[in-house]
Image 1 (cartoon, rainbow, N blue to C red):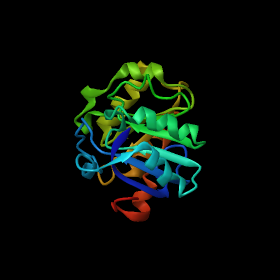
Image 2: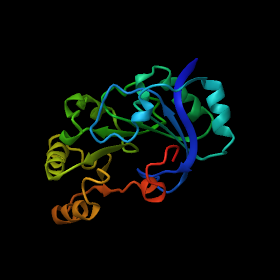
Image 3: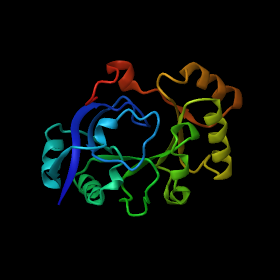
Image 4: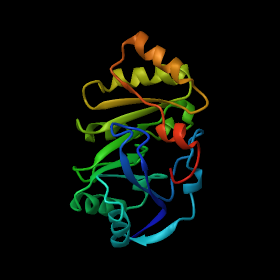
Length: 212
């Protein structure tokens, strides 16, 4: 069984609950979405077909604790589910970065799902599969990437409508170069939101360099 993979690399996690920890990233090729702020368009096409057994060998060379499967949209490839389970079986703490536009029902329960709910500024908010929310548990995270005040207000409404507060951790991220982090921080503090604000650590360290 193989997957089309754009890159496998070792870096510091830039987002989510494990930000700052050394992590192996497996970036799968392909994505059905075209978000306006996407910073991984190079993963839409191309890639290399790699057997899952060979992926595991490459990961093992780094002797990591954390492994993140990302994209693109990893779940666009059916074999991603097998990869996730295989990584868990190997003893890694595994997270999946998914757009939330594809059903997550069959994702191994040991995997930490970091699910992105697309905001209006992404241009893809109509692709959100809201029934996925009911398939998350307390170890999972929901991410909102915000480009402006309208995105912020929309996200607050979604949190209220779907009773997300207390269901799992909620992440708010400013679109790099479009929404000033300090502005987002001030909105969160003013409204006393129970969310974790995050800034993309890897971009602060390495800019837009691929493989980071």
